[in-house]
Image 1 (cartoon, helix red, strand yellow):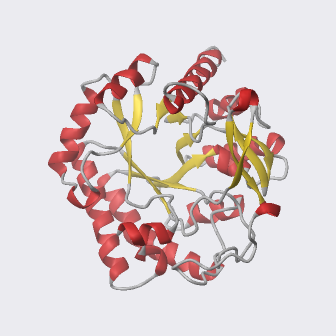
Image 2 (cartoon, helix red, strand yellow):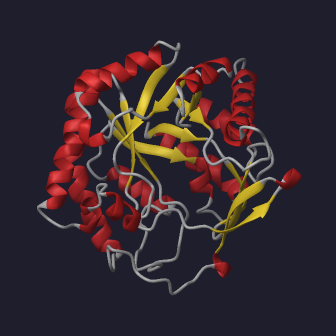
Length: 329
């Protein structure tokens, strides 16, 4: 278990900054559009990352957390979740090609989202020192918001589309020994919100997900923050959930973030000030022999010359200190 980051490098200097801040492993973003990914340029990108003393543990598949309407406008993959054939089969084939290329390029893992409505939030609220906090208050949302481009997507339809996808890609991941790490739906929303029942927005849904096409290369980008957003009392409930997925070796990456609040009512905060005791959480990851990256995720927006890097730097130091604190346990 070790510190990582998914903060995208804006310039080459950021890779050096990561290393200076104690980050040795990253989720990277290849520098050409995914339509142009080839084994050769993925190798070139990995070698560039390694030239800064970093290891490229993971990259993001072209299945992002953006809502489907945004992805339609961008021309990103969206038919996998609308179920439209043959377009979804063409997208799935490209995903399989990327899995093969990453294996050939020495990239051991890929993270992805199966997201239709994006990451709903309400107006930001202020935290300590005036930091701006990402916030979700169900009572402030438009409960009858319009459907997305995907239309009505029931629980059964969503599971059918997920199963169809996994049936095609998991055997390829197994063949080429590349871990596939899926992010939960952030946050939990009641069934039918924006026409969609988000099946990966509950712990039980995540348990079902890992059981479909069960395979050691099929698992989770375990966003601890998102999982706590599914809970009435995250400060007590999260530890057994980490144990459940950790013991099954289904955690391939951890977004190590904290919230104040719980289901349908929370703010995202710095890791030291939330509802979850992060020291107790990291002890559970050690207990289950979790072997990969712990990384910051959504950080508060602060007043600094370089706000995002500064906030992430704080989180890197916090995570590194926790990792050192459990070394002797």
